[in-house]
Image 1 (cartoon, rainbow, N blue to C red):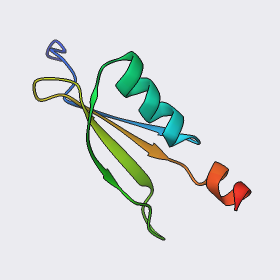
Image 2: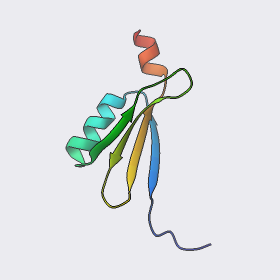
Image 3: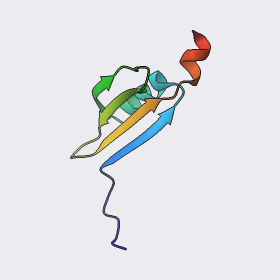
Image 4: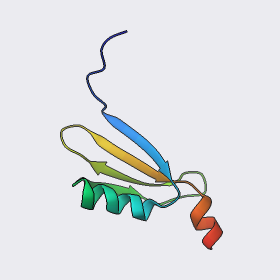
Length: 69
């Protein structure tokens, strides 16, 4: 197996995307590149540019928003 040289794209699920976006932008200095609203079949995502060709792509799982609304 070849050595791991880096990670180009990472997706993380959360129940509170607002809080995770704030963490990535304020604490880590990542730039919010774009968001995609949730649909019936796909979660809300917020892609962050962390430099170079690297991105973090958190998505919100359905727990929190369904329970609140």
